[in-house]
Length: 312
Image (tube, rainbow, N blue to C red; front, side):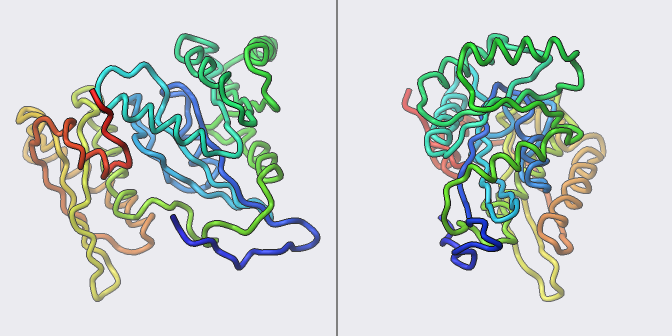
């Protein structure tokens, strides 16, 4: 855990200093990662076509007035079948348990479907303060939104309901303003310029994984993973980054490399641009693809992703 930043103790202009945690909970593809990136104003959580891209607790830090709001973007809640799935769901609810406020995100277009219903069931048993955020509200008529709000609040008495479009940012500032005023009083927990407590190496790996999935989302299972093997600062101020993309089979390796290496080249170019932006310096990115069978049974791989390997 980062040492508390005591430079913001006390209050300014009569407003108290506040800091706290907000857990974003929702079904897969409800738009949590997109919302997090809007709230924080920077890319801290990957967004892809595939469900279940967020594996561990990605924290994004937003500053609003005198408040520091630390968002925990949990893995989407779903019915886990494999060990990796179970580890992700356990981690999600663990993240919610430690939060000051739990924000439940629902895809307004899907409404209270089976996935949202499963989230509500677990949320009902939690004693936290809870708010409801309806996402993609630009796709529905007002009467349908009001009906959905009423149905959701019948299930769980949410403290507030917010309507947003995470994709274009509509309604997002209202959510942040409200949360900022509800955080516990106390010193900031992170330095002001630290938007994410993910080490840059891990964020860089997530960025590359996103680019792989955006390019190959129909052809590659999401068990594929990326690890940053080297992060070396050079004398000229640039960084040399070496990463390995791990896949489960030789056939997947060929897909990732692509004909004449074109796929891996495109992934590398896109990832390098985003990693350089995150690191705020020039980046030289070198990607390697390796086959690693049965990696999902290796406890060390889970620890590197911030997950616990569940028992059978």
